[in-house]
Image 1 (cartoon, rainbow, N blue to C red):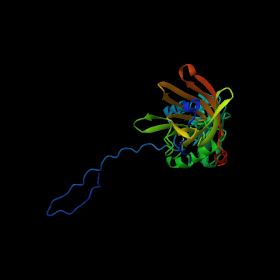
Image 2 (image 1 turned 90 degrees about the vertical axis):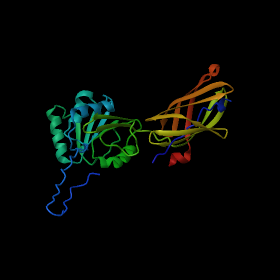
Image 3 (image 1 turned 45 degrees about the horizontal axis):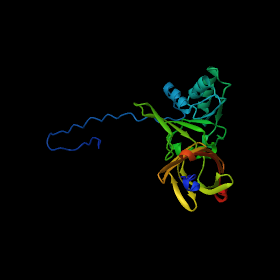
Image 4 (image 1 turned 60 degrees about the vertical axis):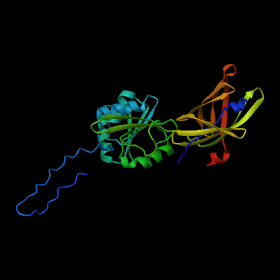
Length: 307
């Protein structure tokens, strides 16, 4: 499990009750009339792979996923095939794969796609999603029973590349909070969720900053993370400085730190990408006439990279 990430870099130091009715016996001729049965509100809809999606849900889910022609879309839970058909018709991703263990649903969905004229654009696989290879996906749409949330979460985090978008029809994934969520129907309490798979940046990252020609200063960035939520510090000359503003979106990392030194406000902002065990980007120091941009390259420590 990922934990929180701390990250410290360009410190300026581096530059200086309803009960059921009960029948009882009463004395004499007294009678007790049983209370009327209470009205029971319909339970919220719990979508699964056999539940056809409404047109509104289909449209909203694909829009939330931001599907494009460059995407490879995997759909877990076939329903009646309308989600895949709508994606092929409107967004035209370069590949669509529908996975469901139910042979009847796969056959029905395939027949619907064929009738709609998209039979050759959509691949249907009768498989258990937890056993399927999802590594090629850039977008994953989920319509599975809610009790599978924890299991599918582990599968998605293990298989998918950082930056892959995930959308779900009514299925949260435990303490992995969505980046976005919308409600498509108040009456049925249907929610749609959106996540972006985060890069793993847990650990210590070593780098050095060239603050003048031929002069470099070493630093350590220390991160902890829980999914896309990151905490971090920068360690310079044995001093630890907290980084208060960190954002991790897929493999893109940004953070900033502001300090006031001798009446001068200095802000360092980093924008970069996580590439395995290498962090690359540009740090911009806003310090008046001393404002500069610095290339930043940091490597994750060997011990942590091997874990």
